[in-house]
Length: 135
Image (spheres, rainbow, N blue to C red):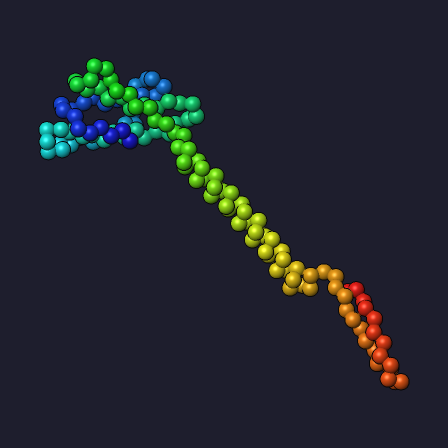
């Protein structure tokens, strides 16, 4: 979307791909009156850019000595990249802790591996004999 606001008279607007004018898959709204003798226009380019292509919106207007060109930057701002990195790190850490918790819970529920049992036997003579056994 290319949006131009507060101009008079209405401009001529063009989309560029790698510096060449794009004439297809482009739609634009009519010039909309702001009510103060200024206008605005919205222009849309339906296009999927490929890596390395440079997409630009060029506005030619009588008040400009040369056309104004705004290049579309597909990269994310640094703050958004940081947010994505922090979110991904939190997700990985959460998965690790969840897996560790499940492992601990299952191990605890099944007895946790080896443990020592104390067996005691009472003999007829009243003697008690106990021993430990690893289970």
